[in-house]
Image 1 (cartoon, rainbow, N blue to C red):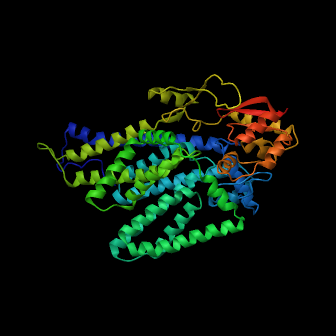
Image 2: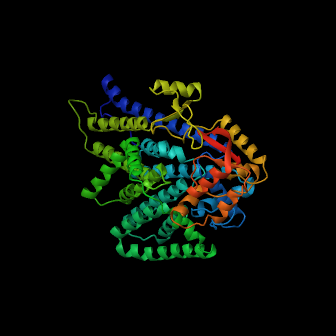
Image 3: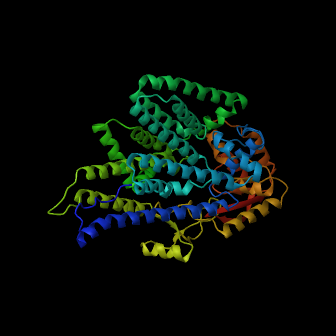
Length: 552
């Protein structure tokens, strides 16, 4: 462990020297306190989500349905043209990992949320490990690991029943493990192909958790090609072959529905304004991490050779443009955030090491002024970064007091989101987020749970499953999970779904209940619903107004 300042060589220190050497340590302590505080908030949010028995983010219930189907030995890649019109558009690994929990506890939302949450902790640990191995400064390693978890984006989606953060976990562990492997090989000249095999398996796991992992796969093979071209090709060929064979097997086993639902259904329109807005927000929220990582990557390009981490960061940032696709969002920046945390740790370690080996003193003092200055600026930058990504629930007096003390409001006014009723007046929400008005991040309440139970009771008044945009209500009612609205819309936009049977059922009022939240269904489906069903109740849950509809 390195001290934030070099100890003076003389035995007697003056009062100002003691103050100067103590000041960086105080700032480091404050920075650690800030990010530990964010970690506490993250755990509060995660625990609240573990206890919430309905969809918090649209689509979680369909992830749970995928897991249930795997637990029953069935594929979730199915024919969307026939009842129950359900299919998945994600690879299987995340859901397969959760299967034992579903076997043990049944179809519970906390199972996938727990696995995703643990994945973020492993990613943070991998980030801290990489930085610790490079610089041996525990406080800096802890800060960059916690900075990943403190990101507004990671906080929002980390404990959700979504597979994205589980993919980032495999990506981060693969990159860190490969970087350490190459370091060892270059140090002693011995190849470690068994370790490289582990890297390839981790990359394969990332890709079959979510397709977006192709960017990290590309970064790894670019790095290997720059260092050892022959070896890169030697590994790329079998890796591509295994990936392709698994893909082919899945497609054959599912009668072609694997390709239809994981490839064709993911061809979405690109929205330039969405991409630009998210890039601006990402940079503003992560300004210190992003600038430090970018500058260090440029430094390596001009004065050293590019490290795996620099290549990973650049490729991940470029790939984040896919956040502009319809249906994508902030989580697509998570890989770039992980890479930027590691590079920030490397950059700051390098500055500290340089200042320590090239001391600058004044007058008769033996204090290393250069080192003290760097050791002061770095925690100040972390404190500034902590302020940029501020987010906190304020539902308790203590949290509200902390927000007030830091100059933030204790609540924000948000109008409930509705697509099926007249706009509602804004309501006070005890959650503050520098990312702006967010539908994610605030803790679900007992009122939200009661609202979900109320919606379920509406389903139970009838005999059929509900035609619902959220799956949780049918799960609780013990009814079929019908459709996956975003999947259906994607296939419709690509002319790859036949809605004949679905429209016939809706026109014949075959469903006792229709539940709308955002009206993600294809236009013909929404038109049939509008003609054959009418709104009977409006229930507010998680900042949304759910429209309960019955046959006319």
